[in-house]
Length: 478
Image (cartoon, rainbow, N blue to C red; front, side):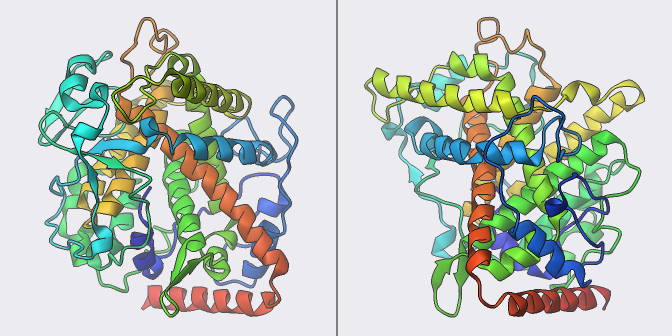
């Protein structure tokens, strides 16, 4: 997940929004294209006064379709409470909370001198002697060999032909991090570099643009004016684009929306020093633009489809459940039971037909799609805050693992007996943690709905949001 700290500095940059309106549910439908229009309040009301459905499935034609999927908003809502509870439990277990990562690679795109010096940016690593032996580099290096394609080595990282992100080369470096003890949160990291991260990520949505393009001075975050706004063209999903490009856009936009939701729910009031949900923030960043919420649902379906396809592989995956060196078979059996429950939900809800993408004349787009997402993973190495960089790398790896599962692996490759080393441990950990983040975002949306239901100053809140949006639009034109 990209960090709240980046998003706090991103209030100077408007969210990338879609020109198109997807989904039949009127409560998730945008009432106007203008960000500063009088429809802001109506859009927010429709999102916040929507009552999530609790009992449905995907067996019948969807009433409120999530575009490019075979499922609907109601179906995701009907399972999210159970899904979130299961994922919340499983990510706190030793196997899924310890993640090995290299947080000290140089930014490959621009000179990055904007390093966070705050203590809140610091990551506390776990000493490797406290990690079960089978997870350590010396052991993993013997068993985690690429099973599909040969590695292509680059400075500090590598990729296989099937990978949608660059993998850290941990053979001689990297460290284990406890994701529970190092949560994603506001760190005070800001400045030109922080403001430029999302801009660089969205520029990777421009198909036909080479990797070198974002190295040019005009794309360097260090050259950005602190009050820079994206142009109206950059704010929109291009009309008439093919399915593959729209899917790519929604994955990035959904990630952005999910992060915005987390930021607004765990918001630091700098006047009081207290943390808590900020309803005004959520309305401005997400609820007044329903398509952003739609993209969170879209990513949730994508992740669940990948987990569903990986069901047999995950059931046979060698999970060392204990944080000690001793085997704890009862803990492992419990985790496997939780995984089976998660896969069961994914089987019901992860309805996405990946076979229709990259067909015919669009087949050539796959490598470009893949390279764009790899470049996004490299942009994470340009984040100047270690804690922020950590969560960016985890979530990008999780989404990349989902895309590899959907677009690169056939049923034979997914067979755990034929391909026991199909995924590295870091990919499995990242996938499950990323699914947890999106389920948690939808959980937070429900919490915001409850806050809206008891709010006594709704008109005042909407007026403040509309004024913030108006000021933002004026600044973007100046």
